[in-house]
Length: 374
Image (cartoon, rainbow, N blue to C red; front, side, top):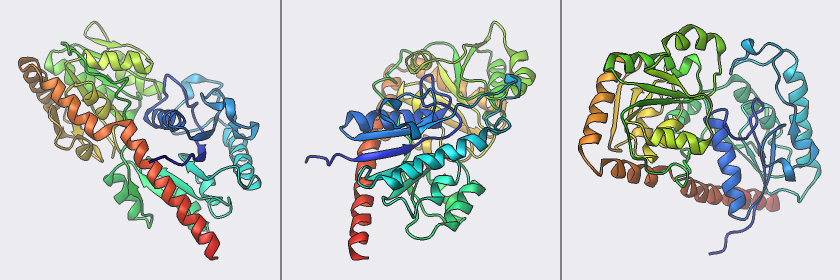
Protein backbone atom coordinates (compact mmCIF):
# COMPACT_ATOMS: atom_id res chain seq x y z
CA UNK A 1 0.00 0.00 0.00
CA UNK A 2 1.33 3.45 -0.95
CA UNK A 3 2.05 5.66 2.04
CA UNK A 4 0.73 9.23 1.91
CA UNK A 5 3.51 11.78 1.79
CA UNK A 6 3.39 13.81 4.99
CA UNK A 7 4.60 17.37 5.51
CA UNK A 8 6.04 17.48 9.01
CA UNK A 9 7.51 20.28 11.13
CA UNK A 10 9.83 18.82 13.78
CA UNK A 11 10.57 20.89 16.89
CA UNK A 12 13.92 19.77 18.31
CA UNK A 13 15.30 20.41 21.80
CA UNK A 14 16.76 23.91 22.18
CA UNK A 15 20.05 23.04 23.88
CA UNK A 16 22.31 21.19 21.40
CA UNK A 17 22.52 20.85 17.61
CA UNK A 18 20.89 17.83 15.98
CA UNK A 19 24.09 16.57 14.39
CA UNK A 20 26.82 13.98 14.68
CA UNK A 21 28.50 13.20 16.97
CA UNK A 22 25.27 13.27 18.94
CA UNK A 23 25.14 15.25 22.19
CA UNK A 24 23.03 12.49 23.76
CA UNK A 25 20.33 9.90 23.21
CA UNK A 26 17.61 12.53 22.71
CA UNK A 27 19.52 14.29 19.95
CA UNK A 28 20.37 10.92 18.37
CA UNK A 29 16.71 9.91 18.38
CA UNK A 30 15.56 13.15 16.72
CA UNK A 31 18.38 13.01 14.14
CA UNK A 32 17.52 9.46 13.15
CA UNK A 33 13.77 10.15 13.06
CA UNK A 34 14.23 13.07 10.66
CA UNK A 35 16.65 11.10 8.50
CA UNK A 36 14.48 8.00 8.16
CA UNK A 37 11.24 9.92 7.62
CA UNK A 38 12.91 11.84 4.80
CA UNK A 39 14.31 8.63 3.34
CA UNK A 40 10.78 7.22 3.31
CA UNK A 41 9.58 10.11 1.17
CA UNK A 42 8.14 12.56 3.68
CA UNK A 43 8.87 16.27 3.68
CA UNK A 44 10.40 17.00 7.09
CA UNK A 45 11.34 20.57 8.04
CA UNK A 46 13.48 20.75 11.18
CA UNK A 47 13.38 23.56 13.75
CA UNK A 48 16.65 23.24 15.66
CA UNK A 49 19.72 24.99 16.99
CA UNK A 50 22.12 26.57 14.52
CA UNK A 51 24.69 24.02 13.38
CA UNK A 52 22.20 21.17 13.16
CA UNK A 53 22.02 18.86 10.17
CA UNK A 54 18.91 18.90 7.94
CA UNK A 55 18.44 22.69 8.11
CA UNK A 56 18.99 23.20 4.38
CA UNK A 57 15.23 23.12 3.75
CA UNK A 58 14.26 25.07 6.85
CA UNK A 59 13.05 28.68 6.67
CA UNK A 60 15.13 31.16 8.67
CA UNK A 61 12.42 31.17 11.35
CA UNK A 62 13.29 27.52 12.10
CA UNK A 63 16.97 28.15 12.91
CA UNK A 64 17.43 28.70 16.66
CA UNK A 65 20.38 30.54 18.25
CA UNK A 66 23.36 28.47 19.34
CA UNK A 67 24.07 28.00 23.02
CA UNK A 68 27.43 29.44 24.14
CA UNK A 69 29.16 29.34 27.51
CA UNK A 70 31.71 32.11 28.18
CA UNK A 71 33.35 29.73 30.67
CA UNK A 72 33.15 26.13 29.36
CA UNK A 73 33.85 24.80 32.86
CA UNK A 74 30.41 26.11 33.92
CA UNK A 75 28.56 24.14 31.24
CA UNK A 76 26.02 21.57 32.39
CA UNK A 77 23.17 19.66 30.77
CA UNK A 78 20.61 21.08 33.21
CA UNK A 79 21.27 24.83 33.10
CA UNK A 80 21.60 27.53 30.42
CA UNK A 81 24.03 30.42 30.04
CA UNK A 82 22.71 33.76 31.26
CA UNK A 83 20.38 35.29 28.68
CA UNK A 84 20.13 32.23 26.44
CA UNK A 85 16.44 31.48 27.01
CA UNK A 86 15.64 35.13 26.39
CA UNK A 87 16.99 34.63 22.86
CA UNK A 88 15.96 31.03 22.24
CA UNK A 89 12.32 31.08 23.30
CA UNK A 90 11.27 34.02 21.08
CA UNK A 91 12.94 32.14 18.21
CA UNK A 92 10.85 29.05 19.00
CA UNK A 93 7.80 31.29 19.04
CA UNK A 94 8.64 32.65 15.59
CA UNK A 95 8.87 29.10 14.23
CA UNK A 96 5.48 28.21 15.67
CA UNK A 97 4.01 31.44 14.31
CA UNK A 98 5.39 30.47 10.88
CA UNK A 99 3.41 27.20 11.06
CA UNK A 100 0.29 29.07 12.14
CA UNK A 101 0.60 31.69 9.40
CA UNK A 102 1.25 29.29 6.50
CA UNK A 103 -1.94 27.19 6.32
CA UNK A 104 -1.55 24.19 4.06
CA UNK A 105 2.24 24.16 4.46
CA UNK A 106 2.33 21.40 7.10
CA UNK A 107 0.19 18.42 8.04
CA UNK A 108 1.61 17.89 11.52
CA UNK A 109 3.96 19.28 14.17
CA UNK A 110 6.19 16.70 15.86
CA UNK A 111 7.42 18.15 19.15
CA UNK A 112 10.58 16.93 20.89
CA UNK A 113 11.25 20.21 22.70
CA UNK A 114 11.74 19.92 26.45
CA UNK A 115 10.32 23.39 27.04
CA UNK A 116 6.59 24.01 27.42
CA UNK A 117 6.33 26.77 24.80
CA UNK A 118 5.33 24.53 21.84
CA UNK A 119 2.53 23.03 23.96
CA UNK A 120 1.16 26.52 24.58
CA UNK A 121 0.62 26.78 20.81
CA UNK A 122 -0.93 23.35 20.33
CA UNK A 123 -4.51 24.65 20.14
CA UNK A 124 -3.86 27.41 17.58
CA UNK A 125 -1.52 26.01 14.94
CA UNK A 126 -4.21 24.79 12.57
CA UNK A 127 -2.58 21.34 12.43
CA UNK A 128 -2.27 18.56 15.02
CA UNK A 129 0.75 18.28 17.32
CA UNK A 130 2.28 15.13 18.80
CA UNK A 131 4.82 15.51 21.61
CA UNK A 132 7.23 12.81 22.72
CA UNK A 133 7.94 12.49 26.45
CA UNK A 134 11.64 11.68 26.78
CA UNK A 135 12.09 12.55 30.46
CA UNK A 136 10.46 12.36 33.88
CA UNK A 137 7.72 14.95 34.36
CA UNK A 138 8.77 18.54 33.71
CA UNK A 139 6.81 21.37 35.39
CA UNK A 140 6.98 23.67 32.37
CA UNK A 141 5.39 21.04 30.12
CA UNK A 142 2.68 20.21 32.65
CA UNK A 143 1.82 23.89 33.12
CA UNK A 144 1.81 24.59 29.38
CA UNK A 145 -0.45 21.63 28.65
CA UNK A 146 -2.86 22.65 31.42
CA UNK A 147 -3.08 26.18 30.02
CA UNK A 148 -3.96 25.04 26.51
CA UNK A 149 -7.57 24.74 25.41
CA UNK A 150 -8.73 21.96 23.09
CA UNK A 151 -7.28 20.46 20.97
CA UNK A 152 -4.15 19.76 22.97
CA UNK A 153 -1.12 17.85 21.80
CA UNK A 154 -1.24 14.09 21.56
CA UNK A 155 1.59 12.43 23.47
CA UNK A 156 4.02 9.57 22.97
CA UNK A 157 6.32 8.16 25.66
CA UNK A 158 9.57 6.26 25.25
CA UNK A 159 8.70 3.61 27.88
CA UNK A 160 5.86 2.31 30.04
CA UNK A 161 7.73 3.68 33.05
CA UNK A 162 7.79 7.19 31.58
CA UNK A 163 4.16 6.96 30.48
CA UNK A 164 3.14 6.01 34.04
CA UNK A 165 5.01 8.99 35.51
CA UNK A 166 3.20 11.41 33.21
CA UNK A 167 -0.13 9.61 33.62
CA UNK A 168 0.05 10.32 37.34
CA UNK A 169 0.08 14.03 36.40
CA UNK A 170 -2.90 13.73 34.06
CA UNK A 171 -1.20 13.20 30.69
CA UNK A 172 -1.93 10.01 28.74
CA UNK A 173 0.69 8.84 26.26
CA UNK A 174 1.07 6.03 23.74
CA UNK A 175 4.29 4.10 24.32
CA UNK A 176 6.66 4.00 21.33
CA UNK A 177 10.15 2.86 22.39
CA UNK A 178 13.24 4.48 20.93
CA UNK A 179 14.83 2.78 17.95
CA UNK A 180 18.35 1.83 16.85
CA UNK A 181 19.73 2.05 13.34
CA UNK A 182 20.74 -1.59 13.04
CA UNK A 183 22.45 -0.84 9.73
CA UNK A 184 25.02 1.09 11.80
CA UNK A 185 24.86 -0.97 15.00
CA UNK A 186 25.92 -4.27 13.47
CA UNK A 187 26.96 -7.53 15.08
CA UNK A 188 30.41 -7.13 16.62
CA UNK A 189 33.10 -9.71 17.28
CA UNK A 190 33.40 -9.03 20.99
CA UNK A 191 36.64 -8.67 22.93
CA UNK A 192 38.11 -8.49 26.40
CA UNK A 193 37.30 -4.94 27.53
CA UNK A 194 34.24 -3.59 29.28
CA UNK A 195 32.69 -0.48 27.73
CA UNK A 196 30.62 2.44 28.99
CA UNK A 197 28.96 4.98 26.67
CA UNK A 198 26.75 8.01 27.15
CA UNK A 199 26.73 11.52 28.57
CA UNK A 200 29.27 11.90 31.37
CA UNK A 201 27.06 13.52 33.98
CA UNK A 202 26.31 12.66 37.62
CA UNK A 203 22.97 10.95 36.95
CA UNK A 204 24.60 8.50 34.53
CA UNK A 205 26.94 7.17 37.23
CA UNK A 206 30.08 6.93 35.09
CA UNK A 207 32.29 6.70 38.18
CA UNK A 208 30.45 3.54 39.27
CA UNK A 209 31.23 1.84 35.96
CA UNK A 210 34.90 2.59 36.56
CA UNK A 211 34.65 1.18 40.07
CA UNK A 212 32.93 -1.98 38.82
CA UNK A 213 35.60 -2.55 36.17
CA UNK A 214 38.35 -2.13 38.76
CA UNK A 215 36.65 -4.65 41.06
CA UNK A 216 36.31 -7.08 38.15
CA UNK A 217 39.93 -6.63 37.13
CA UNK A 218 38.90 -5.65 33.61
CA UNK A 219 40.03 -2.84 31.36
CA UNK A 220 37.22 -0.41 30.50
CA UNK A 221 36.84 2.14 27.72
CA UNK A 222 34.53 5.16 28.17
CA UNK A 223 33.09 7.18 25.30
CA UNK A 224 30.76 10.17 25.42
CA UNK A 225 30.42 13.89 25.82
CA UNK A 226 31.43 15.45 29.13
CA UNK A 227 28.19 17.14 30.19
CA UNK A 228 29.42 18.22 33.62
CA UNK A 229 33.07 19.25 33.86
CA UNK A 230 33.09 19.38 37.64
CA UNK A 231 31.75 15.83 37.91
CA UNK A 232 34.29 14.56 35.38
CA UNK A 233 37.21 16.23 37.14
CA UNK A 234 36.21 15.07 40.62
CA UNK A 235 34.98 11.51 40.14
CA UNK A 236 35.88 10.27 36.67
CA UNK A 237 39.26 11.65 35.63
CA UNK A 238 41.10 10.51 38.81
CA UNK A 239 40.15 6.90 37.98
CA UNK A 240 41.52 6.99 34.44
CA UNK A 241 44.74 5.22 33.51
CA UNK A 242 46.08 2.27 31.58
CA UNK A 243 43.05 0.12 32.47
CA UNK A 244 40.44 2.88 32.31
CA UNK A 245 40.56 4.87 29.08
CA UNK A 246 38.44 7.83 27.97
CA UNK A 247 38.05 7.66 24.18
CA UNK A 248 36.28 11.01 23.89
CA UNK A 249 33.25 11.81 21.76
CA UNK A 250 32.82 9.36 18.87
CA UNK A 251 30.67 9.36 15.76
CA UNK A 252 28.02 6.68 15.37
CA UNK A 253 30.18 4.35 13.27
CA UNK A 254 33.16 4.59 15.63
CA UNK A 255 30.95 4.17 18.68
CA UNK A 256 29.21 1.11 17.25
CA UNK A 257 32.57 -0.44 16.40
CA UNK A 258 33.89 0.20 19.94
CA UNK A 259 30.85 -1.36 21.59
CA UNK A 260 30.83 -4.27 19.15
CA UNK A 261 34.39 -5.28 20.02
CA UNK A 262 33.73 -5.15 23.78
CA UNK A 263 33.04 -8.00 26.21
CA UNK A 264 30.20 -6.30 28.11
CA UNK A 265 28.55 -2.89 28.27
CA UNK A 266 28.02 -1.36 31.71
CA UNK A 267 24.96 0.88 32.15
CA UNK A 268 24.96 2.76 35.44
CA UNK A 269 22.21 5.38 35.83
CA UNK A 270 21.59 6.60 39.36
CA UNK A 271 18.26 8.25 38.52
CA UNK A 272 14.96 7.04 37.10
CA UNK A 273 16.27 6.48 33.57
CA UNK A 274 13.35 6.88 31.13
CA UNK A 275 14.70 4.46 28.51
CA UNK A 276 18.43 3.87 28.15
CA UNK A 277 19.22 3.98 24.44
CA UNK A 278 22.77 2.77 25.12
CA UNK A 279 21.28 -0.59 26.17
CA UNK A 280 19.43 -1.06 22.89
CA UNK A 281 22.54 0.01 20.94
CA UNK A 282 24.87 -2.41 22.75
CA UNK A 283 22.46 -5.32 22.39
CA UNK A 284 22.08 -4.56 18.69
CA UNK A 285 25.84 -5.05 18.39
CA UNK A 286 25.50 -8.40 20.17
CA UNK A 287 27.30 -7.09 23.26
CA UNK A 288 25.96 -8.24 26.66
CA UNK A 289 24.68 -5.57 29.04
CA UNK A 290 24.98 -5.38 32.82
CA UNK A 291 22.89 -2.52 34.18
CA UNK A 292 21.39 -0.95 37.27
CA UNK A 293 17.73 -1.76 37.81
CA UNK A 294 16.00 1.63 37.67
CA UNK A 295 13.33 3.52 35.73
CA UNK A 296 12.53 2.07 32.32
CA UNK A 297 15.64 -0.10 32.11
CA UNK A 298 13.97 -3.39 33.13
CA UNK A 299 11.43 -3.10 30.30
CA UNK A 300 14.13 -2.16 27.78
CA UNK A 301 16.16 -5.21 28.78
CA UNK A 302 13.03 -7.39 28.86
CA UNK A 303 13.80 -11.03 28.14
CA UNK A 304 16.68 -10.39 25.74
CA UNK A 305 19.52 -12.88 26.36
CA UNK A 306 22.91 -11.64 27.52
CA UNK A 307 21.57 -9.15 30.05
CA UNK A 308 21.69 -8.79 33.84
CA UNK A 309 20.24 -6.24 36.25
CA UNK A 310 21.55 -5.39 39.73
CA UNK A 311 20.49 -2.92 42.41
CA UNK A 312 21.20 0.69 41.55
CA UNK A 313 24.55 1.85 42.89
CA UNK A 314 25.94 -1.61 43.69
CA UNK A 315 29.29 -1.61 41.86
CA UNK A 316 30.34 -4.97 43.30
CA UNK A 317 27.20 -6.69 42.04
CA UNK A 318 27.62 -5.00 38.68
CA UNK A 319 31.21 -6.26 38.45
CA UNK A 320 30.12 -9.84 39.19
CA UNK A 321 27.23 -9.70 36.70
CA UNK A 322 29.34 -8.21 33.92
CA UNK A 323 32.12 -10.76 34.44
CA UNK A 324 29.64 -13.65 34.31
CA UNK A 325 28.04 -12.30 31.12
CA UNK A 326 31.38 -11.70 29.43
CA UNK A 327 32.70 -15.15 30.31
CA UNK A 328 29.50 -16.93 29.29
CA UNK A 329 29.32 -15.11 25.97
CA UNK A 330 32.95 -15.81 25.16
CA UNK A 331 32.45 -19.53 25.93
CA UNK A 332 29.41 -19.98 23.71
CA UNK A 333 29.72 -19.17 20.01
CA UNK A 334 26.49 -17.82 18.59
CA UNK A 335 25.30 -16.07 21.75
CA UNK A 336 26.18 -12.64 20.38
CA UNK A 337 24.14 -13.34 17.25
CA UNK A 338 21.16 -14.36 19.42
CA UNK A 339 21.46 -11.14 21.43
CA UNK A 340 21.61 -9.13 18.22
CA UNK A 341 18.58 -10.87 16.70
CA UNK A 342 16.43 -10.29 19.78
CA UNK A 343 17.43 -6.62 19.96
CA UNK A 344 16.82 -6.05 16.26
CA UNK A 345 13.32 -7.50 16.56
CA UNK A 346 12.47 -5.05 19.34
CA UNK A 347 14.40 -1.89 18.54
CA UNK A 348 14.69 -1.60 14.76
CA UNK A 349 14.53 2.09 13.86
CA UNK A 350 12.74 1.27 10.61
CA UNK A 351 9.99 -0.59 12.47
CA UNK A 352 9.65 2.35 14.87
CA UNK A 353 9.25 4.84 12.03
CA UNK A 354 6.66 2.64 10.35
CA UNK A 355 4.65 2.78 13.56
CA UNK A 356 5.07 6.55 13.76
CA UNK A 357 3.75 6.89 10.23
CA UNK A 358 0.56 5.12 11.28
CA UNK A 359 0.17 7.26 14.40
CA UNK A 360 0.80 10.47 12.47
CA UNK A 361 -1.66 9.50 9.76
CA UNK A 362 -4.38 8.73 12.31
CA UNK A 363 -3.83 12.05 14.12
CA UNK A 364 -4.09 14.01 10.88
CA UNK A 365 -7.24 12.11 9.85
CA UNK A 366 -8.92 12.68 13.23
CA UNK A 367 -7.93 16.36 13.26
CA UNK A 368 -9.30 16.96 9.77
CA UNK A 369 -12.49 15.08 10.57
CA UNK A 370 -13.01 17.14 13.74
CA UNK A 371 -12.51 20.34 11.73
CA UNK A 372 -15.16 19.30 9.23
CA UNK A 373 -17.65 18.48 11.98
CA UNK A 374 -17.00 21.66 13.93
